Amino acid sequence: MSTVTLETPTSGKYEQPTGLFINNEFVESVDKKTFEVINPTDESVTCSVQEASEKDVDIAVSAARKAFEGPWRKETPENRGKLLVKLADLFEQNLDLLASIEALDNGKAHSMAKVDIGMCASTFRYYGGWADKIEGRVTDTGPDTFNYIKKEPIGVCAQIIPWNFPLLMFSWKIGPAIACGNTVIIKSAEQTPLGALFAAKLIKEAGFPPGVLNVISGFGKTAGAALANHMDVDKVAFTGSTVTGRTILKAAASSNLKKVTLELGGKSPNIVFEDADIDNAISWVNFGIFFNHGQCCCAGSRIYVQESIYDEFIKRFKDRASKNVVGDPFAKDTFQGPQVSQLQFDRIMNYIKAGKEAGATVEIGGNRMGDKGYFIEPTIFSNVTEDMQIMQEEIFGPVCSISKFKSKDEVIKTANNSTYGLAAALHTKNLNTAIEVSGALKAGTVWVNTYNTLHHQMPFGGYKESGIGRELGEDALANYSQTKTVSIRLGDALFG
Ligand code: NAI
Ligand code: MG
Image (cartoon, rainbow, N blue to C red; front, side, top):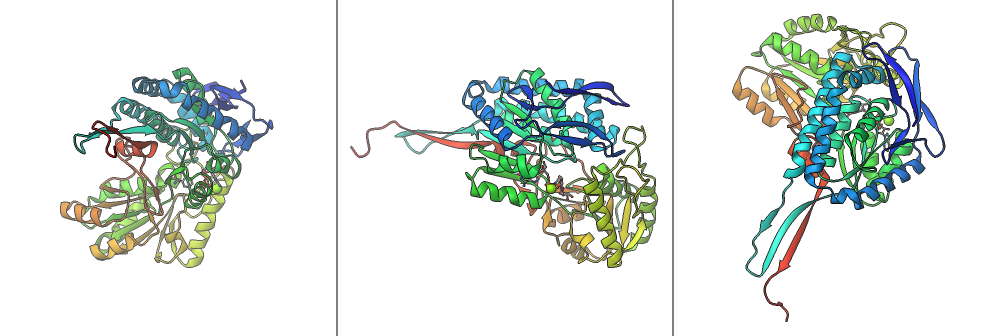
């Protein structure tokens, strides 16, 4: 088993697995290829991990197939549930270490990463509870037949996840897949492979049979594409960019028409009405965009404030955002760490440049912070018009645009003026406004007087180009099961 000793300020030294986790063993890749994991805080190399190629994907898929057709099929739903609950317990027992790994690998604040890990445990436990409650039904078509409709697992599922919430996305994907009785090959993002590999160790410790959950590290264009194109993968679930989502849908279409669910990008509107509790609104608007360094698919990046309170709002919002502590993810008070990679850093800085060139006003921020690590100042643009690139495209960084609106009807129209439809929010004390505007916004989630408050019981996913299908809640079970109708003839032969 390949491991390396790593150290974090919050958890001390620990043994980090670096192999591909296939059939409950950490193995080297067929070509013995590895890639480097970069620490975004100081740009140093943390370690190297094994890199999956198409050949390794083939091996992982056969392991998952063998487990699916063999022992896993015969496992009771109750035991599937127990395994997930055990994994939840192990996440809680290792909460501090897992959060430290996330902070090291992704650069997210350790205090925030702890919340992520708690949510992973809740997700596993929630789907553990579902495992023995997935029921079919009986339908009466007359006395001559007995019909039942049952839910069956889909089979071998490939799950491709991003780097912004490495372990949280891992739990959102694995929880419902296992509850429904599938087997899994999950590919972490190349920027953040460490958490998933440590979690693989916990999968083994929890007692999952070999081949049920396989965890591989590798790149999108090689390992990811091999999974999406594979003829023996029955389903692919993906979270990431809309561009890659389209590629995966095409790969499914041109291979074996595997089932596809996609959770993609967003450009979510966050609307503040003049009757809102302004202190609350400012704090949720700030959290809505700057949480996780703006690297959230549901980030509230388009902020619309009603005319009469606009001047006061912007003054106080600037003040609030400048107090966000940006720095070392392991420092106690840090709210915002570095962006995940040089590439993401460059993308965001290019958007900031584009905003400035298009004539938008930088209210605060707009620059790199320090000269080491991928840190960017919290940035607020005003005087942004609807046609500007920074208003239309997902920036995925600590950058937002703020503009004013006059009427409810006007803001509904501008808020919906996006190809995306993942999330939206509004702040008001008026119940009628809350219900009317929530109904009119074209988004999979609408938050009222809050933001980013995700919960494992509540479905999450996108309208329009933000995705296909829903994760979390009972809805996610539909992504991982298929319906079988069985019709039994009781009466005499019909054509006899
Ligand atoms: P990406 O969508 O390319 O990568 C996400 C995952 O997909 C990774 O595991 C990657 O290895 C895999 N992947 C990439 N190309 C693939 C392919 N051809 N076939 C199969 N799998 C593939 O996202 P990337 O490049 O890391 O970030 C680009 C932008 O995507 C960000 O700036 C952001 O706007 C958006 N994004 C959205 C996320 C979300 O939560 N919805 C998460 C990450 C990125
Ligand atoms: Mg990419």
